[in-house]
Picture 1 (cartoon, rainbow, N blue to C red):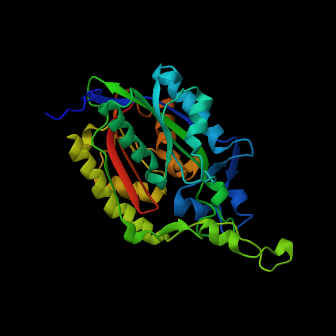
Picture 2 (spheres, rainbow, N blue to C red):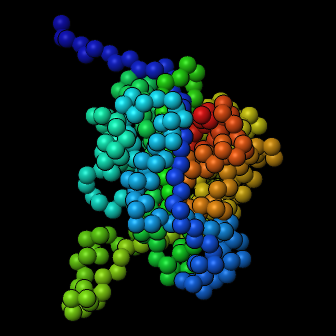
Picture 3 (cartoon, rainbow, N blue to C red):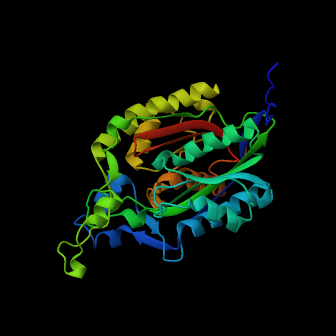
Length: 342
């Protein structure tokens, strides 16, 4: 008789136990953006809903912002760093290929030998991380998992590009996922559409950028730093029509109806997209909606946990409420789920 592998037993359910965020100290109002592009405050607000965004300073690195956000999430969860059995960092703006920034963050937090790794899923990164963490906790490979969404998109912003210069911000958001006696994270409805990979992308690969002659060395054309670009109208249509369907699938998978929600926390991509999704989902007027983009800009993987923390701090949503979250972005990728707020 062949030997069998000993089964692994994890928690029956999982939930978010704590959330925390970090917002850089430097505020970039629309008036400053107008120094870079030919536009107006009214045009920016009408097109995106953004009044200001935060940009990181030299000391506010991807790692530093993550450590600050994670510390708050761990404290709220009421656990010790050494209890964390996994660190997942969702980011597209850690500019060092290897090692993963998650390993530095885990070490600085005091998470011992916890496995730590980065994932690249753009604005859906937090949702992807949440799905992985839920599986790790219920699968028995970790008791608590730290999920961080962090971006320094100011490093990848072309301030001369009128279509994107006003959009992006920096920041970090973190959540601690752990065992629960009742379901706290619904089925994560996630996926991708690689046929639209060029709709949101980096302008050029790093090897292409740095293979060019450098004018500083007298060799010709000056190297141009890669930046983010997007086809705004295509993204808008995709987000409004296709992502509303994904959000509905997440509600159905969780067995929840829109009127049972305590909050709707979509990725903070664009206020017009948020308003259109609210209409498509036919959300009742009493369901509070995250609109953190007005003060924070689009922070990609960080936007959902940052908005979640702010809603809880301001009393717009409360612990134990059910929230529908959905992230979507470059790839094109998406992830949605119904969660219980910590």
